[in-house]
Length: 397
Image (cartoon, rainbow, N blue to C red; front, side, top):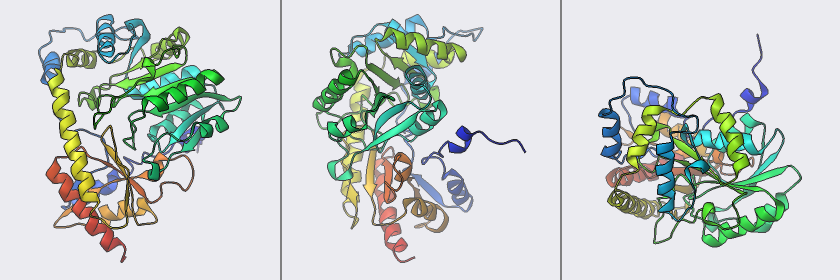
């Protein structure tokens, strides 16, 4: 039999999606599964975006430009200007989701066996894209006791070698919900300039910043024009995960030119999705104000209910819509599967994301889970009550 590639064997399973078969089995048994495992917002997509697709008069669904339409990219640049980010449409490549933007960035700045430093826990697909590109991830541990704040800058500096090409952050963070401060961004900026590295920031949750704290983009940092690369997406911002539209944004012309060649190989981003995403830029600020208010309420209720469970540690998120929780158990993977296979309360159970898959360091996160608070408040209260009962029962198994 022909053999599978080393890359294929090394690709990690998604900690978010690998439990789907067990959830499907539970539903077939008549058990309702409450999903705390995936960041799929239940907020309605702006109507203006849906109408743009529904009411268009396209007769030939043709390719767009490889980098996305000029009209759309110019409107995206205008959007960034409202967030104190000064870029032009020539600094933007439209991609098939933020995932493709990240793949293009990695392919443009690093060769096989090069290294990218990432504070962990981090979005699990960073591992997958790095493996696909032959890049080595060098993790720097952040701790739940510190709310997953940026580790000491000395810890990053100690990891830098001749093979280091970049530092990658997610801000606000997935899976932590941590929002990096302006001071933390400035420390990273100084470090990458000192060693002539790239600073790549996944900023797809930019709008979701709470408690009066403002998001500070690496593209706002002066003197970082040649170092800063932003990965962005419409998925969470407009509750348009299925559109698969993202961006790679940088003022570094060499990176743009290299990424454009990767983009040419896949021809162009999807045309209908660009139409919807362009229209979504006309979404009024009142939409975001209402969404942020809703997520703050959900976060507060989640934290309030979680504190009723003895023996757990909770990181307080200031952005995105994720919360990391440390449970009084040894193996969250086993617990998450047990929830779906063996446990329910009045015909209901919960699906969580085991956190070990968000770490690169073997053994870390084994007793942690990520909760996505993208459910209505009543559902969150019910889900945490089920989780509390499950932990009590699990301790006796």
